[in-house]
Image 1 (cartoon, one colour):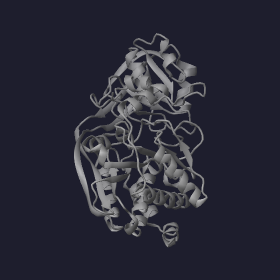
Image 2 (spheres, helix red, strand yellow):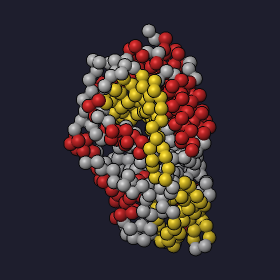
Image 3 (cartoon, rainbow, N blue to C red):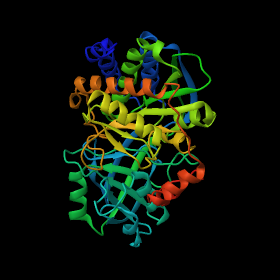
Image 4 (cartoon, helix red, strand yellow):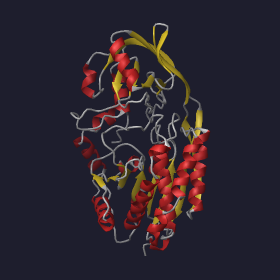
Length: 438
């Protein structure tokens, strides 16, 4: 029976939920908006037929934005929402030092002496580097080099200062003030102020806060289960439509489709809407840490899809996941993009680093950067309902494929995961950011 395909392609459940999420406004981890979004997602999963939908709260280190600026002497040269904003979990305070533009801020760029300097790096990674260098890695290279402050310059045009957290699991608030500036502001700073003594000031609050995870089930009540997940939180400067309202809306649509096919499910499907992903994978780390790996058949984590029409399925070298994706693609004669390298970001990672088979599901886009993600331009008008519906159809079929009793997934050992990270050049960055789990 294929009627579920037509039902999914004409359903407005997922898109309506996406609209509800972006209309919340601020969904920053620990905020009232995040709590509202978690409850909306709980209610949406219950409404489509998932059972025991509930929110599991947990405590986090909160962070609330104030004003930020860069000054030359007493005169502001970068301030305001279109020019300069704090990076979440930056400490409050100010620091003054010689301004140094380190270009892309890849590890070799930090061979320059930047002790006591205000360093600026780009959000981009050059093609000459064989891996994406994450913002937090660049920040902690700056900290290790003794920089006084960190400036993260967007490489995307449009007066869009980028956001993104700093800090580690053990020390959630970073060590030096950190701000994001637009490409235009970064270009102006580099041209006019190389060698000048600049001051970076961040005003923020760091209260205790509460976040949570949404959990609901479909299918038989088996000991083994498959996780279908997304993160519900978003940065406070935008609607968070792509990142990650889209992912959360997609899993709600998948839940609706699976509820109509529940008699086909051989294994329990657990839907989880994680909180506090954007500040260090906090919600998923708690769930993964409590999970018994042998009971988790696989993780299908959806993060930043819909903007790109073609689904990107990073399967982390798990052969059974690669094969399942290929079967679904062939069955529907529909392209998907497959990747075998490890992606140590987003909510699949706390599971995969423990050897649990998992996908990172996103939308394929050009280039390595986030595009409009993590900026004020991550808005609903960039997305198309057609893409959400098509992707929900493919993911629904993928879940049914994976929970079949005849499909076996094989976990990896710590040694296999660690060896792959080393081989892919990712271990060094993970060690400096405090994310190395081995």
